[in-house]
Image (tube, rainbow, N blue to C red):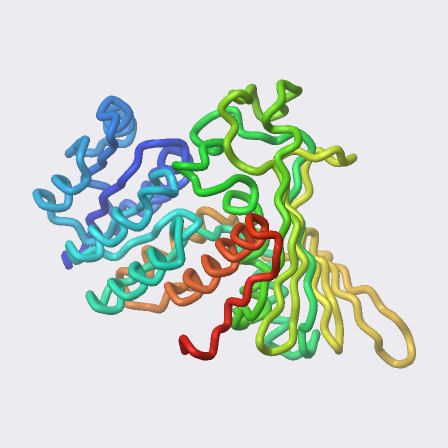
Length: 353
């Protein structure tokens, strides 16, 4: 690898324009984005002009074959995450792939296997891990301030927040709705703070009650007649260490708040709300609430991209690992399977270990 990290972008949508490209640009002493590919070549050409990218392609495989790259950002719809990631890894590139890891557990496992085989970094765009609240709370947890975290509650709910852009309501391209799009963020945050325990059993229910009807859209108008994903998932996950998570996620629900993104942790020495951060403990025969008056200012997406760059240059392990991606994918797909079958799904099968 040269002194400058040579980066390619696969997918020229909003996440590439608003997150990956501007944050690579902040580190132009270390990084140069040299190529971009999108099936709609015109979209790639627009970003190439805006960000000074030399090479434009409509086929990412051609990009990987013809341009020397050190790292690649995968910014495609979910359906194409696995194929693009595997191709980039096999071309000898480090990869940051947007969430979720993939559409299926098998895809996530193959992505992890390929990264290991090629000796390359594979990490995922779970930007909430990089917030100041999560960074601070992780230190408290590592200092045993919460003790054994045995229960968590995860909310990622919007009152009327169905995306009116992109392919977020297309099940074929996305694999699902709020669970795989916004719920995955809060679920990953809880799992990260709980040190990613091994899942045992999941039970989920899914609803499509509002998205398939014409209504008010706080995130723009959506095509309700082609709405093919769920608009709500509720579920419970248990883990082999005895801990559990309750999750509730929705694009649209009749609730008071316009949006709630929250994680609540409960341990035997303390508990915490993560967004905003508050810690609850019992000390000296009193119940105390600890509220930070100052937190170091982390900006989640910029720090996420900075850490990826540093991992590529210095060979440091990424904060989000392929193994964690597989665990998360098992839970997501397990919840969908449970909702489809109307029964709990066992994920930890000793016969398969």
